[in-house]
Length: 328
Ligand SMILES: NC(=O)c1ccc[n+]([C@@H]2O[C@H](COP(=O)([O-])OP(=O)(O)OC[C@H]3O[C@@H](n4cnc5c(N)ncnc54)[C@H](OP(=O)(O)O)[C@@H]3O)[C@@H](O)[C@H]2O)c1
Image 1 (cartoon, rainbow, N blue to C red):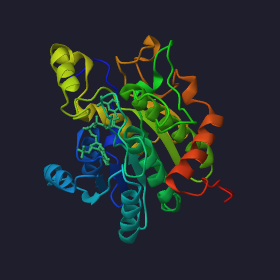
Image 2 (cartoon, rainbow, N blue to C red):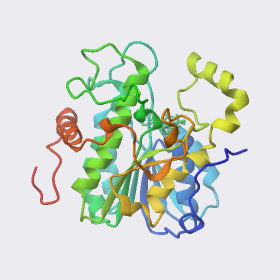
Image 3 (cartoon, protein in one colour):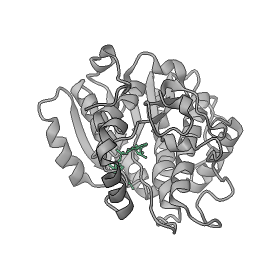
Image 4 (cartoon, helix red, strand yellow):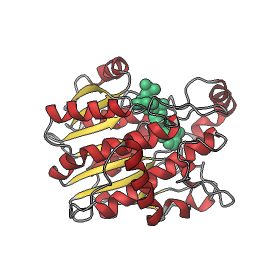
């Protein structure tokens, strides 16, 4: 059973022949990433499934047997910056093109205390944003060489907050070193960062043939949140209403597929694309939009986006993001 107003890609998008094109999908072994991957392989693409658990990726990928395209599973743990660098080195040894990058993986570290990665980063933002930031910046040359090409950042409705409380990035303390940790706030902040990054990439890559977008996939019946007590309780409580509120993983993959494959998405580089979603606190946003205007002004401020890129470059050990003219 499907919600009434789910957005689906049109037939032209879902029947495009993408034979010969190469894609990377992070978190491709589960939920939205798995279904995004399945459709790309179905349409003839080659998908590099970037997974922290290679065996889980290989297990899931067995279900792709008989599809037109191809895939490979490669190890990448977004919580470890060196793992991201190793992944990029290995990818570039095997491939000389990248037509689409979908930064899909994400998690929320539940509880009242922050968890830190071995790089000293708060794990929710490390996985959802810093790891993807490093990955994208390291792959930009091959993405540009493959233009027209596309980049997607999976964000969340949560980035929008409510009229009374709009999440924002705390540029002075992105890693919760001097604030009390709050799991939902940390997740929302990481997802604001993803929206800002796509917007900044849209501007930085103007004229290069590379386009970028951020995405809310919908309320997916995925493995998100794991099997902790809170998530289990939420699943039980919402069980009778799930078909009316939530989306299958295939439905939740539609916005990512629209961003990667549709003819129209490149006309809106830098924009936010959203599945319809009952989770928006602003009622007027609930129909979603491809693209749609985020109700959160903190996710649309280019000056903040540029500062975030500069600070993030330092945090992940990169030079400042380069402009199209090569200046830093
Ligand atoms: N579910 C929703 O309703 C919803 C709503 C809005 C946005 N989103 C976003 O949608 C995206 C996909 O989530 P989903 O719903 O499909 O959840 P999911 O089924 O839990 O998939 C998340 C994926 O991220 C991977 N991942 C987690 N930590 C990682 C790390 N350190 N390195 C590499 N990969 C890592 C997971 O790998 P493992 O299997 O190894 O854990 C898994 O493959 C996420 O960015 C999420 O924030 C989801």
